[in-house]
Image (cartoon, rainbow, N blue to C red):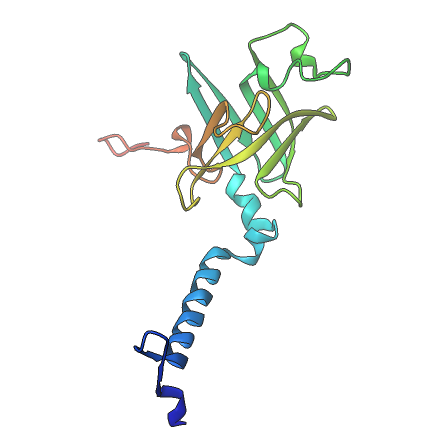
Length: 188
């Protein structure tokens, strides 16, 4: 028992405490590994908590206009004034969604959204059985607790997406037109 805490001479002649240092090193490595794999099992495995993070209204404001993307809990989406460059002209001779026929600057459409199991940071948007667009989770901070939806016009091998949509409102939050106020007379 006393051998655990005895001093051993190294090549430099300085004493080194062997086992307690090893225990401290193993504990430190364990804490670091635990921090790197943080998150609930649902978040790591693509469960409902991960999906809930995407539900809500996402908006982008630029060039005097705004675009919005609403991801609903039932797996449907609605895109309003969405940048057409993200949707139209991507097909090589195949069908495109109807909204792209007039060569617009923006597109409004509805469809379904999903998170593929193998790609937890990706959201697929489909409309009329066709791929509408693909969003990528773009961390807003080093720790990634908040994020934007990033869209690319070409290669995703760029440091930043071409278009960023920020979450402006969860779907369960009251909307301004749903909030009632009382006037001074006491009536609604």
